Image (tube, rainbow, N blue to C red; front, side, top):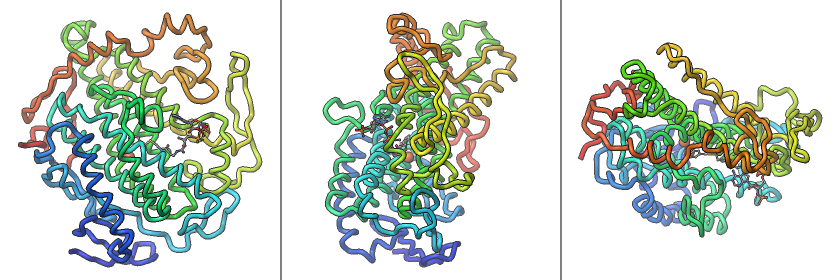
Length: 483
Ligand code: BYC
Ligand code: FE
Ligand code: FE
């Protein structure tokens, strides 16, 4: 067993790195026999879930994956062939910051909690369970995509995302086992029992019950939905409950890759559409590509369901999370006033079927503050995609729909809006929605393109190869997955 003790860069507690342990970790698991036993009992159930609900097929194949071998940045460059069930799932926290203080809310300036504050136990557990639930959900949603991968590199990227989401589940389960006793252990079991899209025991948040059964959806999901993950993790990284903050900070290091898979994936679909337009005219479908209007519909869908993941515009839950110091704002340190007791946040809310402007007390607007930061980030990505079109001499442009479009949660959920944000009747919505969201026919067309390409260096017709692989220094032709 490798048992390396190293002082964290910030001078906090020495971190013991137990890399070769049954459960690799830097939380000194071998020093807590009870916790270790509990997690070692959960581990086979996790593996059973992985075999049942993780990637369909490929479990015995060698996949060229990145595995964390330490929590330092250098520990990230470790690539090798592994069989997915042998992936070193474990528990890694970003090293602790000495004397960390709570950065916001009613307890601002007090020492960060190393134990669960009793009065907020239920709320805290709920946040952790909600976060944890999304991780296995996404693996379930993506489980059949390997069967139709457009290239070996894409196949490998899918599996890299999947194993890391599995590890994110481990992170939340560690918190539940370690800090919540019996009910935490029960929640950890239930995280393996709910199933994406299952009517009787669905996953907790709506977007994680949507089918993600083609690669266009996969790229949209990793661009838009993993980006919600980024913003939620940033808000939870601010938490006054220090173990939650540290797990989230470590998870964020992996989120960047997930989003880049989405961004470059969509970029390559756009690139290919533009090439086909130059080669054979505007009818991209006739040439077996994904046309830009279809791509826009998938964008509209995944953006709007991801907006719902931020919760209601006006939320007393969010206000309580903030007051209690459990969930902060994106980059809380950028704000001057960490109490947020004064001040208002302007937003448009629905009253009697009309959008009206309202200034909402800041603490109640925390979901919207985070959602707006997210929208700005998404907008930049769309602009980068549009630059690909511009460079290719194609005049079509992509855009984000209005934030009220196709919403289920919050103030807009009970009304109908066009992508430009104009209120319409339910009849108009039903008549028009096929122009704005993927229709059965659009889905059938996209699905018809999804035939696998497993030969190294080859790629499906509907997508361009990447300019760079982002997998160490390996070229596109590399055999990323082998029998
Ligand atoms: N679907 O007061 P509100 C990721 C419920 S993604 C269904 O606004 P709150 C990842 C809500 O539960 C990031 N129900 O809610 C990405 C509440 O129910 P009750 C995941 C919803 O609590 C890709 C009611 O509506 N992390 O990591 O302020 C791959 C009133 O709502 C939904 C987190 O979510 C929904 N979308 O906000 C892998 C962070 N939204 O109490 C992974 C932790 C709301 O009336 N979670 N409801 O029964 C949170 O911070 C909050 O729970 C939420 C909801 C922001 C999600
Ligand atoms: Fe995740
Ligand atoms: Fe992710």
